[in-house]
Image (cartoon, rainbow, N blue to C red; front, side, top):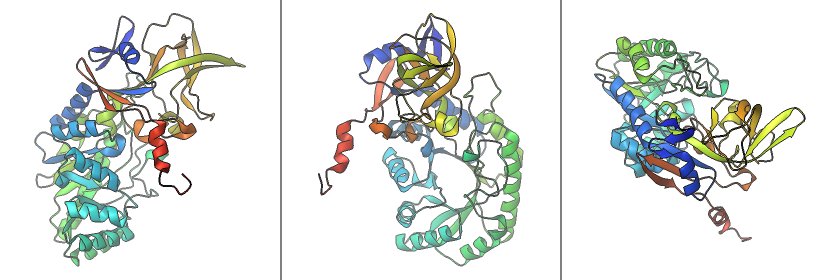
Length: 417
C-alpha cells in the first residue's frame, strides 16, 4: 500500500507526511498517492480482460482536474451527474462516446449539452424521457440512451446510499418498461444503446452484483425480443473499501467481475461505474491537533480539520480510520476527534482509542479520496483546503487552498457591493 509506517512516521509512497505538513503553508489539507490511483484503475482493467467494456469513473466521487486527466490517460471513461461534471470531463480530455450522464433530475440545458457532444444519457423517468426527446431535437443529434431499470435488489448498505431498491428515487418502474420501449420506437432521434442499474454504494458482497446482473440480462432478452439491438449492460458502481481497517475481506474488482462473467453475453458490452473503489483509499486528510480537553467523562482531541472539509463521518455516521503521522508517547484514552465548527455534529471520529497527543501533532483521517473533498463546504466560513499529490518522491499541488478573497469575489456583482 502507498500509505505505510516507518520508524513511527506515516509515509505516502516515498515521502514522510510529517515533512510534507511542515513544508506546506496550509492546514488541514488532502494528500493523494498517484501510484495508488494507478494501481486501483489497473485492477479494474485487468479484471475486465476479455470483456468489451467501458470503465466509467464516477466523477462525483472526486472531481480534481489533475486526477481526472490522469485517469483519462490510463484509458478511463467518465460517468456524470451534472452538466458541470460533463464540462470538466471535456476539459480533462475524456472521450464523450465513453461518457454516461446519469441523474433523476437532469435539466434541459444539461441534456442539450450532453446530446451535442454525443454523450450516452440514462432515461430515469417519464418526464426525463420527454426532456431527452426535447434535447435531441434542440441539438439536432441522434442520442444514445440507456434505460435505468430499478432491479429492487437490496445492497445491504446505509439507506442514504442505497439506490436500487423499490422505493428509491432513481430509475423506472419495471412494469413501465414496455411503455418506454414503445416511445423509443416512435422517435428517430433516440437509439436504445443499453440498460442500466445502480444498486448503491459501499457494497461488500459480490452476490448482490450477481443477483442484479441476472435480472438485467433477463431485461436485455425481453428488449431484444422487441427488435432492439442493445449494445451495453451498465451495472453501475458501488464496490466498497476497507474503511474500518480491520482486515475484513473486501471484494476486489476481479472478484466482482468474475462473479458475473459467466452471465454476460459476448455481444453485450459491459459498462461499470467505479468511483470510491478507484479513489477512496488513495488519500488522507491531514490535520493538526489544536488541543485536548475533557468535559465530564468525555475526552476530546480538537483538530483544525472539521465537518466543513470532511463531512462524511457526521453525515452518514460512518467510520474512517484515524491515527497520528508521528510518534506520540503517552497514555491511551477513548477520544472523540472533533473540529472547531459550531455544531455538535462536527466530528471526524468518535470513541477512538488514541494516545494523548501534544499540541500541533499531525493526525490523519484515512481513506479520504472519495466523497470527502467533493462534499466540502464553506460552513462557518471555512475555506476549502488545498490538495497535494505524491508522485514517487515528488510533491505536487493539484488544487490551491481557497481564500477569503476567492469567496468575496462572488459578491462583486451585487448592487450592494
